[in-house]
Picture 1 (cartoon, one colour):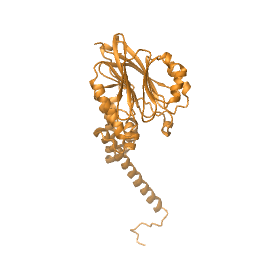
Picture 2 (cartoon, helix red, strand yellow):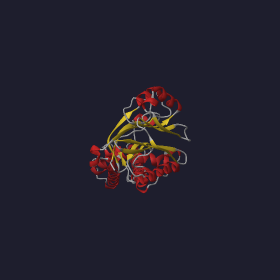
Picture 3 (spheres, one colour):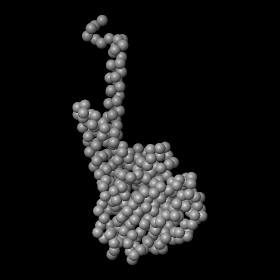
Picture 4 (tube, one colour):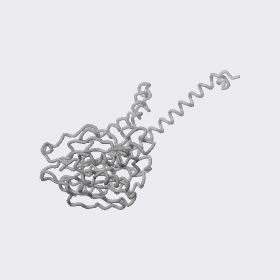
Length: 342
């Protein structure tokens, strides 16, 4: 036997070989994970939403999906593995830059202190809600001035009528989704004016004006089709909101289920109009609204914020808080919107 060559049959050689193979496999998996996360960063920056089932979901999870990289960066740098440590560190910096706009809160404009306000509650009630009567009672008992309810199935609509919504919120504007057959609507204690339905390829968005203290707030209720139903439709529906927001003069709030987060490029483009996200302005930018139930992901609790209230420069969210409604797969919210005087 050649003493210079290792004895592959020796029992000590096999564990060393196995450990070496395991390390190589672990390294390969690690580099693959870094490549995937790099793609997520690139897709957010460049506005790419291809491979929609993975890319859009990964973009939406930007505040959380990179967290293991922080641990990997620390471990690699402590062990003086400079190349993987440096790669991890680059992704850590990228995540900080991506998430930073959602962190912190905005100072309220001076005019908001004594401006008239409207309180709006927004809920995706879910077309498979197993507790319609309980949910309807909770909604009808809301102290909000206006309800924006989307994905209201026929049985939920009947439950709302039984609970007294026509008495408590008598001013109503509804649209029926041609895709799902559910209702999206505005229900108000305050009379609605300038009621209209904003048409899109498949859906109609209810829009109406409410007035208080001599100032009017334009409310647009939205329920954007999810990207998994069709990337082009999802993008076009979000893009359709940009001219709606940019052309309106006066206080405006676009409220509902956008099926998008600030890290999805089409929604980021909408914020650039500019519009302000109520949760972000009040220091709640990292809160989450979906899923609560109805999917395997719900076992981890809400993972992303799909439900938003967006205001223009003539309106400002002075307060926002999340509210769970029985049986819904979304966490709803109540937002108080101040209206700038002319």
